[in-house]
Image (cartoon, rainbow, N blue to C red):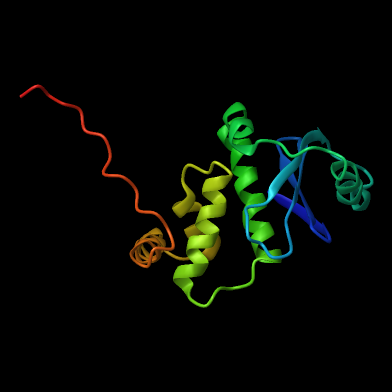
Length: 163
């Protein structure tokens, strides 16, 4: 559950409740928003008594850190904690990402960010964040592929049954 969020220029932090603890996530994003954000800090801590200072302090700390390779990191954490990374992207997009010319372009950009951060159910997460059906998102992504905005997925792998 998102507790709060905080932004200082290109740095964006969120604080989430997780069990009896808090998860602090800080990322950085270029103003032009041409590439997915970089993950700088992922910290689990006890609930803070001085909550208004938590995110500003975390952002200050994160400014001197090297980016975390998010795909590898996500493989090391539980799916519940991984979903907080996806929430970070969704909240960041609300703050930084200006709407594209069409809903198709907008969906494609948001989808690519979720993929870049290792979200295995990107279309579903995007549909929930937008409050629309997953079918609508799939339709927008299919149109983005037709327009060449997204690459088409491969044909998949079929086992040879030896017949």
